[in-house]
Image 1: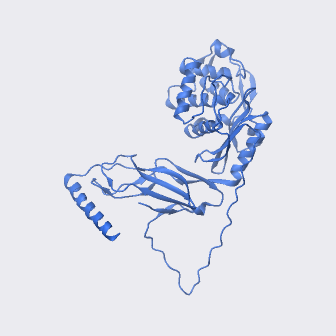
Image 2: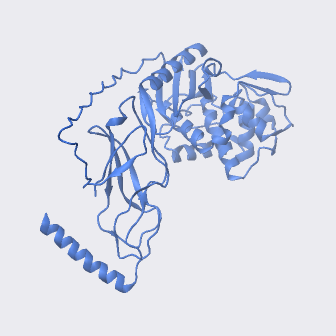
Length: 403
C-alpha cells in the first residue's frame, strides 16, 4: 500500500491519499506559474590535513563528509569517550551514583600520561572522576573508574569491547581505559562518531560536562584541551587525544538552531591543526545542509485494515523520532511513501513490524525506517474471523476483477 507525502517546511507533514480531490481554478482566472527555485549547489567537502576524518549529523546519522573513516588507527585519549559512556550508562541504570566514593589504588595513581592528580588511598566521588576523565583526560581517573566498575582495567576493557560491538563499532578494539598505546588498541573516525552519537542522545543529562572549559581538583586548575570551546560558542564537546603514535585527534560536536553535527579528525600534526581542521568540517556542514524532524515517536501515519481482529483498523507509525539531513533549500522536494504489508492479520502485538517508511529527495531514496504497530490487536471471535474471511475473499475477488 503506497501513500505519498508532500513535505512543507512551515507546516506539519500530512498524508495525501491516492484519490485526493483537488479544486480546479476558475477558468477566467489564469493560474500564476511558480518560479523555479535555484537548486543548491553543494561543493566537495574540504580536504583536511589529517589521516582520517568524518562529519555526521547527530540526529539522522547521515554522513556528510569522510576520508578513510573506517581506517583502524590508534585513538589515544579518544578512548576515554567509551570509558565515560560506560560510567554514564551505569549511572543511568542506577548501579552507581555520582556521590559514590571510589578508593584510589596504587595502580591508578601510578598510571602515566595526563592526570587528574588523585592520590593513592584517597576516596574520590564518581562525579569528580567523571569530570576528570572528560575534561582533563585523567588517565588515573580512568583506571580508578575501570577498577570500580569491573574490578580491574583488563575486565573493563573486555566490557568496553562488548559495548563497542553492540553499538556497531566494527573497527574498534580496546585494551585499556585510557588510550595509552597498545599493540592491538585501535578505533576509527567512523566508530568514534557513532559512539559520540550515543553519548549525546542516550545520556543528555550528563552531556554538559563535555563543554566545561576547566576543572579544579585538589587545588590544581586544569583547562579542557578542546580549543574550540573558547573559539566557537556553538561547540559543546567532546574529547581530545594525543600520543606520539596517534598524533593529535579531536571529536567535536556543535549545535546551531535545530541541527547538531559531530566531527572527528584523527592524525593531525598539532593542537592548533586539529582545531582548525575540525572548524572546516563543521562550517561546511552547517553552511550547506539542514536537518528536519519529519515525525515524532508514536505519530500515527496510517490506519490500515486488519483482518480477523477484535477491531478492524490498526494505528501504524514509527517507534522513534525520524530525522532527515538534506541539502539546504531542497525541502520542497522531500516526499515519503508508506509501503504497508498486504493483508494484515490479527493477532498483532505492539511494536510488530508492518511495513516500511521510505523517504525520497526527488527520485532518490534517502532514508528508510520500519513501520510498527502502535497498538495491539487481539484475535477476534469465531464469527468475526469467519465473516472477515468472507469479506476478504470478495474484496480480493473484486480487486482482481477491476484490475
